[in-house]
View 1 (cartoon, rainbow, N blue to C red):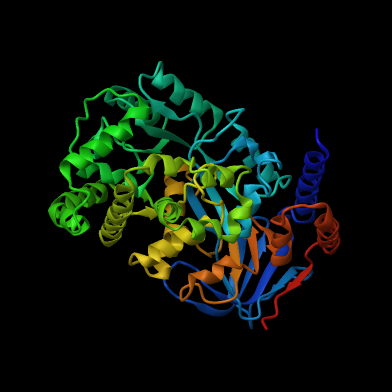
View 2 (view 1 turned 180 degrees about the vertical axis):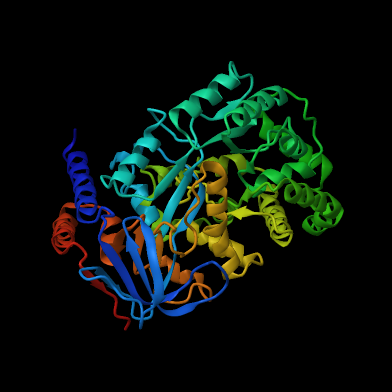
Amino acid sequence: MGFRKLFLLLIAALVTTLFSSCNQGSEEVVAFTNVNLVPMTSERIIENQTVLVKGSKIIAIGDSDTLQIPENAKIIEGNGAYLMPGLADMHMHTRADWEDPEIWPVHPLYLYLANGVTTIRDFTPYGSPLDYALKWREEISEGIRVGPTIYASGKLLYASPLEDPEGTVQMNYELGFDFLKLYSYLSKDDFHHAVAAAKALDLYTSGHIPYSVGLEGVIAEGMDEIAHVEELLFEFIDFDRDRQLPPEEWIVYLIESFILQFDPSSSTLQTDFEMENLAMLAGITTRLRTAQVPVCTTMVVDDIIQLKLFHADAFLDRPENKFFESGYLEIFQRGEEKHQVQCRGVESICALKYGIDRWVLKSLHDAGILLLLGTDSGTGGMGIVPGYSIHDELRILVENGFSPYEALVTGTVNAAIVVERMTGDGDFGTIEVGKHADLILVRENPLEDLTTIKEPLGVMAMGRWYPKDLLDQMIQIPTLETSTQSIKTMELAQAIGYSSFRFSPP
């Protein structure tokens, strides 16, 4: 093992040891005092509040002038800052090689926490053993690993023919995964058997809309959730759903079908498309609303594609790019990145796709469809930085007609609703007595300006408090020069045990 890799592994181990040892969600009380509460139970701010946390739960909320704080409680003085629920990225991916500091300069679990993401839902792990994300979750719960709460799917049902769809579902269930993910390339028969097996086990299902099945088919079979807004685009394209194509040929066929149906060179194509398909979109939203099927947003994927294709310099200038998987930017600069290859020669269609996806998003929102904040981050191959992408997703929602409150609902209240359906434990997403203590302390009112969440003053995940200076240290890319200061900061955190953390606005 090279010196740099050994050095980085030692630093990563030290981060986990010190952070977990100095704050393990113990049974002592933590008190947030003098905060303006953003409870997310409704669109309101409750001023001058104190919130008491014991272990991983909120145990009391009240006026700071009257609520009694237990003796020896750890005090987090807000001085008028805003306390809101932590965010959930409800569509992302983990990779086993997140553990390798030569591939990932900062562990993505730290990036999520530092950006206020206290819950993540893994739509297919990459790497082995298959259940590594479940082990991470257990270690986070025990306080021996730093990270957000993890919900996870297991082995992906990717393409037909499947040898044993029922057996794969059973294996995922027995390993303890929270839900089953289904993909685009399943046949009607394999999809039917997989969903039926999941329903028999009461295992939640989410995924793409298989091209051979279509929206009407997935609703009829009872798939619980749709994994992307963009999946609904294919409902507007006329193509032969009975075709049996290998995965690499499906996208080519669909693009060809779109070009035959629509004229990509038309200057009014977006407007014409919307006018011609209003009735179709109304039918889609009606079916989703009637079946109570939620949809993940993941609009940042389209947004990043536009940057990569048409504003490469702006893409390369983003400061969070330093957290990319090693080698990604070199691939991009060679023109060999995934979306550069997929969109080559059909750039206008990729641009149009984003316009159509935004049109669909707005209609889903207007129709009251349950939408879930998700970013598709974590894979390392798409130019989407874990944690940071949640702020892009919120921005996109607001740009497309959501109020800041409505945007936050997708990553708090709605996330809890779906986790309740999925696991029976959705006790998060609002600030109420008895809910999990997943919280973000921010400087300004997030219901007026969501960008304040980009710079949290601290994050609490399942009762463990991470003030800003420690969050900053967590995501500092380790070097020989910075390691000494990082170690000193974390040793100080261990020594003080967070007995008092005060925020004093300028």
